[in-house]
Image (cartoon, rainbow, N blue to C red; front, side):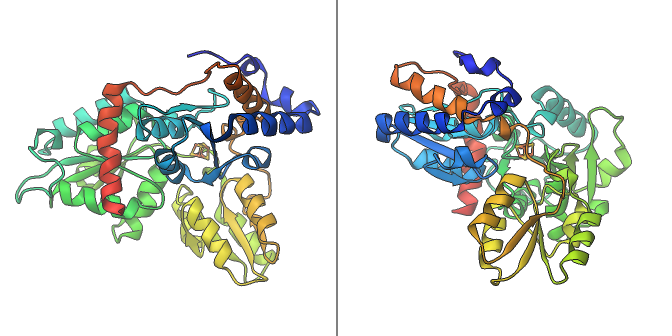
Length: 384
Ligand code: SF4
């Protein structure tokens, strides 16, 4: 994998240089020259100066599907690392996936790594009568009567090797828009006394399970840095990994109350990566795509408080000028890793392509991709 020279610059250095028009023109020129060979994907949390060049925008799953459905030879993913990995897994062998800045990771995805998850998995199996679904002849069928399994579920926001772990052990991937359907699927494969191990985001797992009618006694948290609490782990139906999103963790019930005081009648929607108390206090909760639809469908004149990343909130406010869309957090809360995709990197990446240089390619090794695609396809099969 070749590095890109600008990657040694800090984002602050790049932002401090008044070259935005120059980057914009360079991107437009290079993109025109490359034509349909290249498709640029922009996640909703990207800055406007990236989104304006995107051929498609959306959440991580929607963009991975757009990549898979595209005929473009080169997919440029303006998002974070796990998203580009998923795109590489779902695209065909004739397509390549590149990132403008390979350092753009995700702090939540980094909270669960394969050795820690394997250690948790082995301990949960060793301390229970649960079976590994990998031992079944067909892990995709509902559990046989009397059998109990531990079924792994990973959020899309996880590395490719964790998706492969899940695929190998008869589990499934979920997104924030399909988590309830995925958990139903997993519970059916776990059997009456089985369990689900959900990682890395404890909040998405908790909010989804509680919305499905389970209660707090059905949930236990696995923190790899702490001694396991076997009493609650043994009683739980869902074991939730101790991960969280540093952006969505910032939203609070006090912010919702302040916004309602300032704007009586305001509608509030929070992303399910927010804490349970915030989701409970909001009028609605949903993925970035659902938030976009909620704002679109709100009556004209509405004030809508949104608990998600600031770039999406500001864009929705600009797009729906007959409504006021406000971020719940009065302090700006960009996702610092999404922000690492700077137009300077995109311009340089495109110009390298014109010179025939492939840089910042994301390549998931075939043995990982083969198992990861099992878990992704299980998800696709239940939402088709
Ligand atoms: S918003 Fe949160 S989950 Fe999404 S990329 Fe940023 S840190 Fe990761």
